Image 1: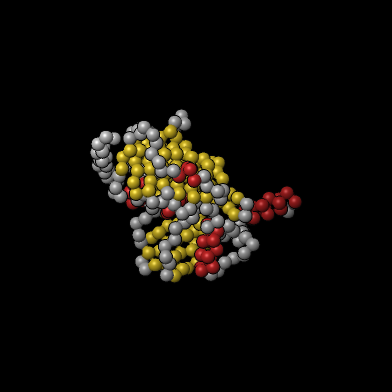
Image 2: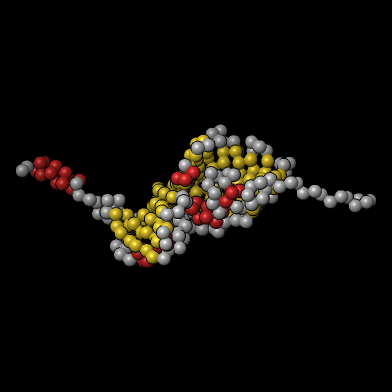
Length: 273
């Protein structure tokens, strides 16, 4: 066999070989509890985020992509500003974890009330507590409280498969073997949402996903978020989370279920005032 033919043979042979799994400096992990501990620590490294992104919504009510400015800080501070194709403001959502304010430009109204999942779903097509929504946006997967854990290795996808079990409910986590970040999360035995994280980029001593997709199969709805220019772990500008109503905008107070409350009657003016 001449040299050219030998080189082609070796190239074809190697192309059929599975790629080596990069387990990083820690090496292969065989204990589920250890992987869970390291993965939890890895996704706890980011506490704040601020910058620009794109939000993609797909639901039975409609689909589309908008530009957004985002400011997020654990445990429950969130500001999302949405803009249309011509960079005109559509809406602004602000919450401190307890209360929320929603400015709808088309309606020219400012909604405010308790930051319940129902009220936050006025803005985003998912009903999540604000702290959980903040966690998801910061790349942190909420875990079920596991009674036991199992661990396998998917050699085809080159990912760990860590499964958390609690009674009849399980959460299947596909974890990157080097960065120890969750790539996919799916809960079985409970009607909830799934998560997918992609486009991981190094940020100093850690990696952070710049794309997240939340899928709610029961509602046939998905929410995608792609960060295009962000900073991480900088001191948050707390003025971004001010819940004061804008001037000259009608205010609508809503209850926990999102129902409008009657306007509060002002006390009568005292004589001589």
